[in-house]
Image (tube, rainbow, N blue to C red; front, side, top):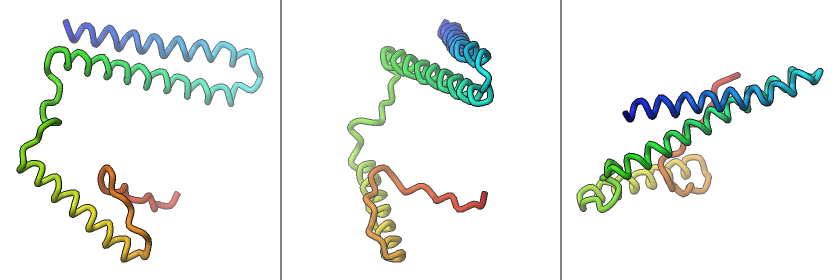
Length: 123
């Protein structure tokens, strides 16, 4: 039953994406600069697909929460687990300060984890 509902929602999302893409494609066919409109059509289709996926994820999360299957490890962690979290944050802060001293820059505030690696690959 749940699988059928997910499949139906996915089919509806695909149909909505096709409708939005075709709605933007019809006016583009009437205009001579179809190349620039084709790019915007592709962007519109991508946005529609992403919006549909986000909506499906939101619905699934609500359904699981209603059934009581929400994540159970997010509130009220034990003292041992909190100690591990604190130790990891302290290491992260110490490493960020060391890196800042090595580069001569100010230490960044680690708010949600280590910084992402820079993309230094040639293009």
